[in-house]
Length: 177
Picture 1 (cartoon, rainbow, N blue to C red):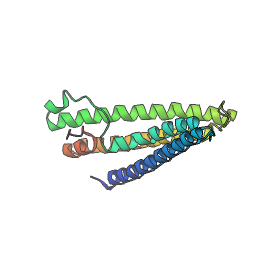
Picture 2: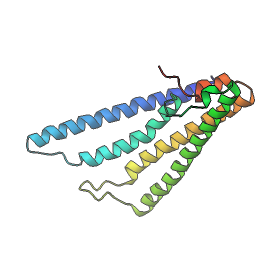
Picture 3: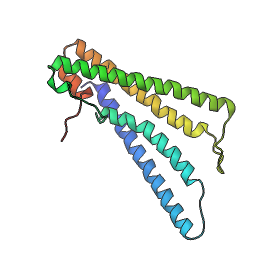
Picture 4: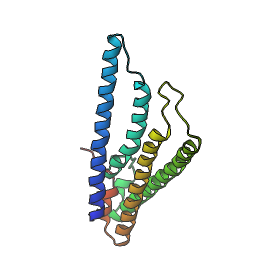
């Protein structure tokens, strides 16, 4: 594999660790809220913040799933094809995923841009400026689009060079264990 793909995997590994740590912090925050309620108090806003955390961690987590070949695929035909056919199917799947990721990032930017122009705040007691969670959410989708585009370019390059095994290692369906 090329150094770019190795770097992309390393970055997404770090992203996954960061996402996991944020989720653990959210769990701790929720547990503190539960204990506080049992004692007659409340921190407030835990449900709002956990909603933001779920949206943000999901948008960043899909890039890790992409580089780990963990996205769900239906490969009824894939296994029956010769290596060149499998590589073409993998390329088609990667291009479709990249297109979807770009569309989500593009449409997500419209949401964020409107929030930035209006200065919208959450209709909650915290009155969170919505640009904060939306920026983090959108950045995750933008990173997913970048990751998918880079992998798509790698796959196309390897197909043109006839290196079908490289395509399968990066974009193929991961074998079940």
